Image 1 (spheres, rainbow, N blue to C red):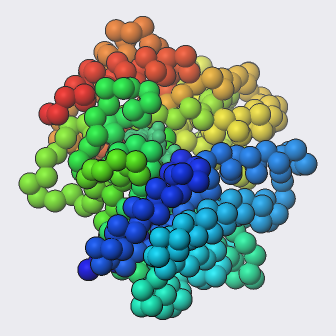
Image 2: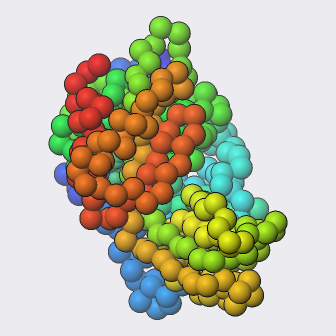
Image 3: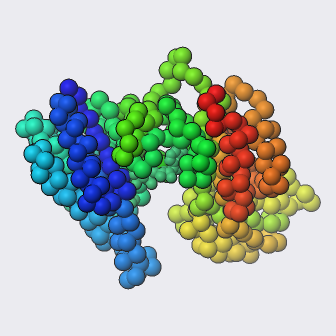
Length: 406
Ligand code: ADP
Ligand code: ASP
Ligand code: MG
């Protein structure tokens, strides 16, 4: 008998029929003698609906009030699932984040979990109940409701699994595991049996939204075995764990992509010490995160400086650059918000040369121009025009033979 934390995403609880199906699944684990804690998301589409309501009142809703609103989605799902379990004579109790003391910092809309007091959950488990917890929400020190950022229910589940020292944290979703790339873009994508925390963290950071980044960070830090599975079919899913000896080291584990990028260039800035900081400090002060950065080799005492930001920050960054242009006496500011980033991820890259060459050749064969490149030990990312996203991902998937089990 083990303690298992299960998380069911929006699609998995998207209708009454699906909630009933989840209840059957939870009950079958309970019937096998396991202690089960369930985390649920809002029913699919609900969080988007709530965001739209808020935006109909204010372009940028007051963060505290937005959290009060968004947290209601999950409260609906926990109550319905708990009812469905009780109907099956499977005793269950639902709790919101603050009721089980999921304490976070006060960064509304993207709060971080600080700690969880699991006394109440333990008590219910001891009484033989299934505990159903609302994902994506917590409470700050002053008792304000907070939310954890989109996709945050994954992080609630992993944090609970860590706090309860669960045997496994199971993330049930609408695909049957982590694939070599998003199976909605490449139908030939292959399910991975295992992937390391390190690779999964890169995939999530580079745009694969199957798991929230923080949930993977958390699982790695507390060594919580994490499994992604289908809520609709039986199967082993994908296990995310530390690298073990003898584990097959795939050259490339997967391809991630991110459609939320935009790039900006300031042309003809003086090629002098301190210029990069004069450009990026005001951007940072405006709370804009910078991703890739390129500075060209200087010619005639001037240089060009290019960087990427989240597409939502594009207009703000452009207007800041216009100001900097005046101050630095630069020639021109330009930008493009129709770009995407495609990345290859794999721990095997560490010990293999030539991967970048194969990647660039595959893109060139499709006539895809690479606008920016960045690399790290286990990833290579390129920025290309948005219209080439699908073509580029498919070309790379096939160039590295990811559809076949290597
Ligand atoms: P949930 O609502 O259950 O949290 P999400 O929509 O957040 O589900 O995550 C599941 C989706 O992630 C899949 O439907 C799939 O389109 C997408 N996805 C992106 N990259 C991958 C990948 N490498 N493997 C599997 N799914 C992926
Ligand atoms: N309901 C939230 C969202 O849609 C959290 C989650 O589903 O994980 O982002
Ligand atoms: Mg999700």
